Length: 95
Length: 446
Image (cartoon, rainbow over all chains, first blue to last red; front, top):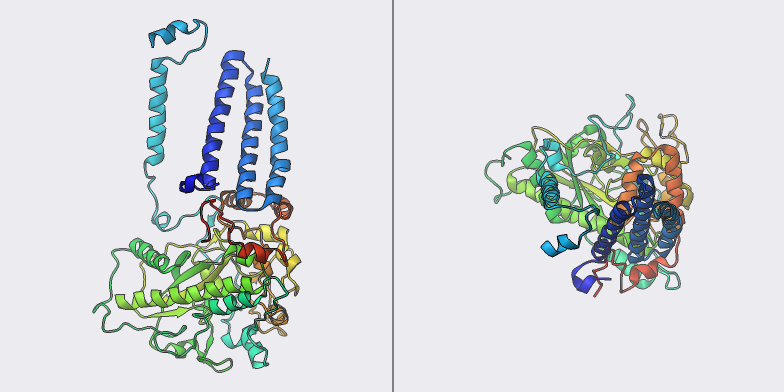
């Protein structure tokens, strides 16, 4: 995962996480402007998506580090709560 | 642009040009604000520590009024040497991972510079290096103490040190008596050993041990990274001592002789004392070997202050090192304790009078000889011993501000994430894997 032998794996990962973060923010803005979703639902959704992005960052970093157990743990300990939050927030926001 | 406006619903919220301009100005202001240097104190110019670090004006451990300087001949290594126990005895066994002939040879070769003979003028540790005919005719004066700190540290890093701290000489941390070269019993009082040398400043240097190598502990590979660090520190201290010589000052390079590394490193702000009684560095955790250079250059001010960042609380709750220690040499006490002379009357290799967790060096060294290694499981299993990767740095920083009970959880999480497993027979294969671990995803072993 060495970005054409120019960028490191972590650099490539954070680039794409940045793209995903922007997409998430745009989604939140769209929900607020188009669907007039409540602020509380957007906060819950943002927390969930942020937690999932963090879990992805952790898991990919652990794979780069060749510690698969750490990657699995991040999926269970961080990704799952993030998924629950995002689902809850999404259900509340999506009218 | 006109067409875009025509196609936009009149009722739909829209970001107008004026709003866009405001947004752009706000972004520019934010970018400028982050780029403007914040006025920094002199200490901030020479240190770079993250959040959670507390600076202290005084030494952060309690020192008893009865504290006495330690005699070098009483160190566990020298006591054992007088009893005929070798300092170290590496072994090889091709049937054991981490003990192959190649592992053994790498270990022995790593110590080449560190284990060179003592007593060679200008190339020995613990001897005074003096200015020579090529030195400046009058000792160089730095413009100010901050510049001196910055340049001395830059020179030390140029020679290969990973961390550098500068502190005043403190006689408490120097041996009361030092061994004569190549002797394990004949000593001289410190002042007689260095009669024409009055050190004012001590530069404390740290050299990182390799993560994959240390993870194989106890093995010849783990020993190799420890000895490689000592050889590296030998190189750094000799060269840094020469740097002081050419500026016109005397200097003494010292890796493990002359005085105590851990309290000097603490005084120079390089870390806290941990449950093992060793140095816990802010960046490298336990994965650091330490040495010193004494010099008679005196600075107007010393900026590096002792630091604490929650290690005592973490160690009180973690116990990974004590759990994994094969010789049970590491204290399991809840809190650090202050030993008196009575407490250590049967253990003269322990110097009483400092509140800390005490390591039983004799039991530890006995396991060295039994295992044919210098062990190092305590260093390797420590949750702070991690490679330089963002998520490990994050957890280290978070640990500095968490309350005590959560430290127990963090220590358990470290194990659940697959770290800290000792006596791992797969670890040597990871070390020797030609693909390497490639922490940044780019580097390859060619």
